[in-house]
Length: 234
Image: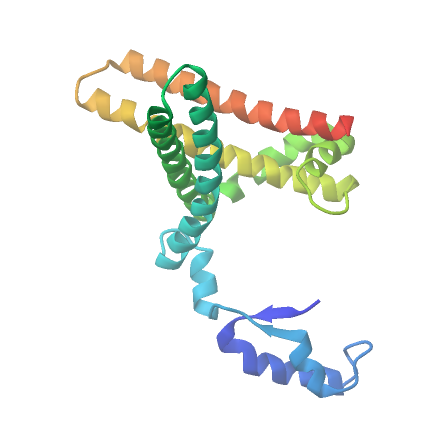
């Protein structure tokens, strides 16, 4: 496996690896020139890499935006196809069905894009660290078998079990909590605007936010539970 290093640290990393090879600290490698095959030059500098891991920086927002585009494109495609098919089945012309599909796809894709960026920033701002204790407590209640069943439903490659599965399940749980929280905030933004404009009451706002949170939680639970059940059957 190659070791990727920041682009501005590449030369010094090569020299360090060559010295390790000379001292016999790299098993199976005796030629210092092979250091270039072991050390890989990354695409970002050390400062850029640090900024990507922080909230609110240009690099961080750019990274989350790129990731959001990937997620949004999938959401757009699925929504557009289903909307187009439903419109045609309901008797709409292909032109109207295409317009409906484009509108729905852009709406869902846009929400997915903003949610992905917001969730990424929340995680980097420290929310992920705050959820470590609670997520690990939930996973301990689930146990290693249930954790393995859950995480292996989303893994590609060799399955994991035991402590590794529980750690991965804890991470998966935290990610879903953060994404769910971001989704509730984004989907409730319109209601918040409406209450400031006097269009709805505080009671109605609470009801709408509660319904949104329940829908997001139910959708996430269904997605995770369905994947785990499918893996179990498989």
